Image (cartoon, rainbow, N blue to C red; front, side):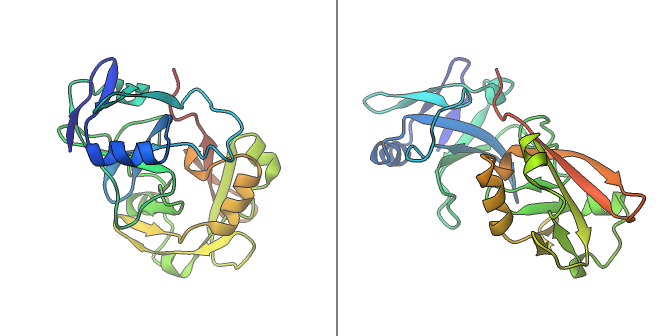
Amino acid sequence: MIHKIQTKNLIINDQKIIGFMRDKCIKHLKFKIEFDKDSYFSVEYPDYNNLMTLEKQWLRITYGPRKVYVRTPSILKEFVGKDIDIYQEKIFPVKFEAFRAKPIDFSIENTKGKRGVGLNYPYFSSSGFLVIPDKYLRNNNFGNDILESRISFNRTDGFLLNKGIMLCRITQEREDYSFPLRRYTNGVCTRRLSSFNDLVIGYGKDVRNFIYNSTIDETKTGHKLIAFEEVRLDEY
């Protein structure tokens, strides 16, 4: 259903989504930019049973008789007056996702500092797997045998995670927290990073809150390290 982004509040009119939110007793929402096959805003609600405190990126919602009101988040401010299509993902639903908002008459693929840095760099999808675009692989000379390689997070430990840093590398070695690669729409991707994600969650982090920072050449090993940094997704 098409909605217009307004200056003060985003008003949700879709009755199916409102019914879903009422059934789940949702009181807060958080907006993220996601880059999978298409670019869109993922709108999540908290796991109230396991979340100790609500950080400021969680926006309180107001229920009206037939509408839901939420303050327009900062990542939508530059698109005031534009249209978005609000819908729910039915085929591959994401846990704690209330709905998605797809841009209609504008693009967010080059939006920086929020969810990622466009589609030319590695990024974590909303489903929790790592995508590495073809352009990034070409620009960094990773070779043609990429599908025979693995992504390894073996260099990332609790010390780095507490500092908001995550490192991975492309290698042909099998080791802890390493995952095979497969072909994806615009490059290659891992499967869901279940074991590594458990490690990250154990330190109170979320892989989707990490965006690409840089690529580092290791002179001793010859590996390239892909560095990610943790960011707040909705700062004011």
